[in-house]
Structures are given as structure tokens and as C-alpha cells.
Image (tube, rainbow, N blue to C red; front, side, top):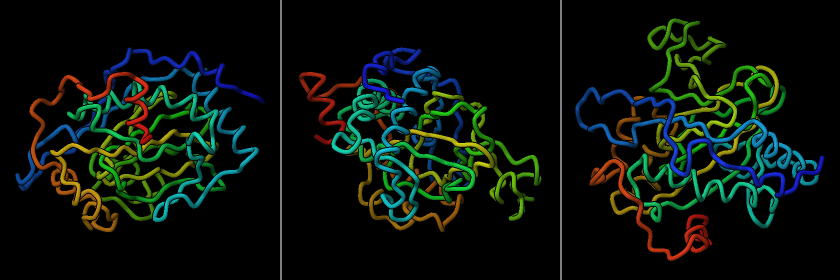
Length: 295
């Protein structure tokens, strides 16, 4: 099936350029009182794409994979089965996705997490495939960047299981008794004690701090496609040494108990306003898009 960029001209979010979440979950308050709640503690879910738009993106990904295959070695510590959305290697996918990310996703991230738009830059953008009998999950990890997002491209009727699961927020597992009684052998939560985020439909955008311990829950049947983005933040309010090189902020071994420190320690100071007007140093949309995508 040939799907060109013309098939994607209708990519237009339902709620306008800046999205409003239909669901938000918060990291619980820090019991030690060391870290105060900030915008980085929130996981937001937004309605973004219509089903026909996600189907068109999946078709582009499958067309690319048929000719070039899927990559399994792009990420050193937690590799995914994916396609890098890059201008040089996947031009059709890149042309379809870049305007959506530059005009809608990144401005939404900037507003809800309290940054200027010009302080955000894409570091990686890729389509992931989770499939029973192949790579069906992604183990617990913290991303190397401060902000991350994902867009579900598959209809929930096309797979079972799966989903984005956080270790310190989200619903408790009803199969093993939740957090205190979580068993390593529980097939429903894989011993985490929590379930994947509820209420995420086809085309929904999920945003979060990459420093929260999270994983891709196991897909038990079918195939699940997700568009994932890693976003670098250049704001002077951020402790860049901690984000990039701090062993705590970059280790999955420390567990969910460290989430408050990993997220709280990332920000040197709270933003002057949780939702600031977005000012940029760029005179036109082309220059801004080039900055957001690193060239």
C-alpha cells in the first residue's frame, strides 16, 4: 500500500494549537517534604489525532519497514524495535510528522511544563512496534532527556496488554493486591504493583518527565504501534549536569522510590509561572522549526 505525504494533509488536532489534557496523573507528594510539587510531576494525556490519521502514519511506517526493515540497535541500554523519523532515512514519515510535532506537540509541552518554546529541542523521534512473539515490552528505565511524549497509533482493539506504566503513579494492580502485595509472578502487572495508564485511546498524546521510572507494559496479543519523542530542555532553570550525567537520574536500578529526587532535582528553581506565554527569538515558523529539530 502506497501512502504519500498528501494523505497526511489532514493532520489537525481536535483541540487547536495548544491542547488541554483530558486526564492528568500526579506523582504523589514527597513524604520527606524535601521536594515541592512542580509541573514536572504531572503526566498528561491529550486527544490529538483521529483514527484515519493514525492509520495513515502506521501505513507510512509499514511501507518504510517493508523496504528498510526495523531497527533494534539504536538505543544502547533499552533498545526498541523502531524506525527513526529522520529526514534523510525516512523522508515520508518525517514530512508527515514534523509539522505536527513542531506546531502542536512541542508548544503543548512548553506550556504545560513551564518552559519557553525556544528552550525545547527534539533529540529523538521514532515509531515503536510492540508485538507478541517479538519485542512485546520495554523494561523499566529513565530516559536520558527531561521531557518525553508518545502518541498511540494503534486502536486498542488491535492488541491486548501493553501501555505506558509508571512505577510511582497510576492505578494499583487489582490482580495481586496492589503495591504492598505485588508479587513478582503476577502476569497482570509483572510484579510492579501498578497497571498501565488508563484512558489512553488511539491518537492520544501522553507527555511526562523522562526521569520518572516507566516502562512499556507487555503486549499479550496483537501489535501496538507508538510514536515516541525525546525532548531536550535548554532552560537555565534546569540542572543539566544532573539530567545528563547524574547516576541517580539515569539509572533504572534505583527504583521508584527515587522518583521525587530524580524529578525534583532536575529543576534548579520553579518557573515564574506554571504556564507562561511562549516567546521565541525566531522571526518565522521555518527558523523555529529548524531550531526545534536541531537544524
